[in-house]
Structure formats: structure tokens, C-alpha cells
Image 1 (cartoon, rainbow, N blue to C red):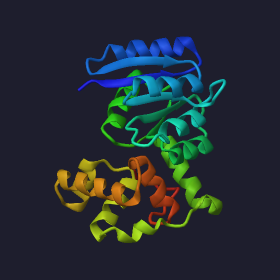
Image 2 (image 1 turned 135 degrees about the vertical axis):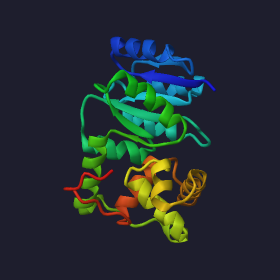
Image 3 (image 1 turned 180 degrees about the vertical axis):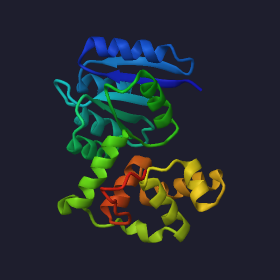
Length: 225
């Protein structure tokens, strides 16, 4: 299966570099390039990419606003990864709330960018470890960042809640299977049910819900995850 990717960045050299790297992969096809958020929205509608690599700061329409428009399209299967040179909590939180599947720093190694496209395409969350840790600490220590638990949270079974907790701790399906002593396929089934019941796009949003609702409380001094 070929993963169709759209690159949105206002710097031509960045777009060219990303395009060359991704095109060299046998399972990835670059279907378009945009130099601002407005173009990104238009090209996404035209080319229906599987994944959009979206720079946060762009002219005409910034990356967050463009991501919101793209992800608000009913029935859209496109996933968005936000790219930035700035490790800023507010951008991370807003991006994930908008429905972005991940957040990657531009100075990440090339292999990480390629992996990001594949990870997000298969439905997993992508949050740089340093960004994830700071984000969750922020949500936990800032009362105004908390939101009321979604009513559907009460509909989760005990096992589904256990799986959600492990997802929020940043564990992969393989790791969750080992922790809960269940089959990895069973974990995948539970994750799908959790996302469906809570009306979430992917694991990234599940992480935010788990922490904002207080289901999981991070320990800032811990290196877990």
C-alpha cells in the first residue's frame, strides 16, 4: 500500500528536502506541496492525501488553522502531522485538540520523519517524547486546561479503561499487551472500541482526554513512558 503525502511548508528548501527523502521510500508518494495553509487546504481537497506534513507557522493561513479546516471535513481519512522548530506547549495542545495525529520537531533525524508518516498512517499517535512529557505535565498542573470527562467515558468497560490508561502513558500495543497479559490483537480491538465510543480520531486525542479528564495523573519527576 502506497502512503500518499502532502507537504506544507513556506520554505522551499524544506519542502524539497522532505519530498526527496520521502519519494525515495518505496511505500510513500508525495502528491503535492503547499507554501501556505490556504494552499494546503485546497491541495488536500484536490489530492486527498493520507498524511499531511504541516508546518505550524506559515503565511496567509497558519498551520493550526489549516489543520482544523482539513480535519473538520466530514468523513475525511487524512491525518495531519504538525512540524515546527519550536517546542511550544500551546501549539501541541491546540494541534491535538484540532485532531492532529502528531507533532514532530523539524530537527528530528530523517529516519524519524519517514517513521512518522508510517506511524500516523496506521493510526498511531506521534508525539516527540520531550513534547509529550511537557504537554502532559502542563495539562496536569494547569486547572484551566482540564475539561469535564466526556459522558461516554462511563460507557467504557474496565478492560477498555485499563487500555486507555496505558495508551495515555505512551505505551505501544505490544507493550500494552505485555503489561495487561493479553494478545496484541485484543489490544488493537480495545483501542478501536475506545476511540469509537469516545468519538476520537486517534490515540493522540485519547491521550489528551485521559489526562484532561483526570483518568490518568502524570508524575512530573517520573521518567516513565
